[in-house]
Length: 236
Image (cartoon, rainbow, N blue to C red):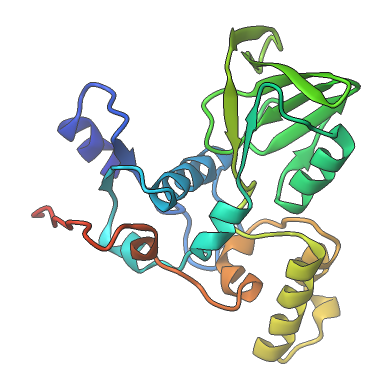
């Protein structure tokens, strides 16, 4: 319905118009949202947090839904440009803690592959994966590529690398998750596959329902928007 409303308001593509969808899963379901959907949500949060002039379409439920703090998205987002310094192994380790998956071949959002001086990444918030070519530790070129053929396409000057998930997976975040788990649940964590998976640095299915365990304080979509944001409720 939200997607149909977006098309109704702007049949032609518009950079200002953005859609913030819900997870499209039931509360406490054992499934996680699709990577593409998370990518679109993170892109909207990142653009809103940096002050882009958006026409945002969403639902009342999404306005009330708890989200990661604004500084989580802003502090864990990187802008990579040609000429920047990049250490491949350190970069891969950093992105792993930010929810990215290390693979041999990049084909889906949230994946990264390092092969010598080449770094392939399908950054959240981007429409296409990118191939970063390094000269030693300097970014020499950035090109988009086709995930099916793996052939490069267009040159780009810079890319935004957003967090891989709406929650962190670094050691501090895992510790906080474990501590809050013990505060909220009176059960043996050894009997919880979800607890054990997060403790090992993995992102199990359905983890989004436990988002508050990763943060001391949550935010709402309104926290990402300017104070003078005009809210219009559509009839229906």
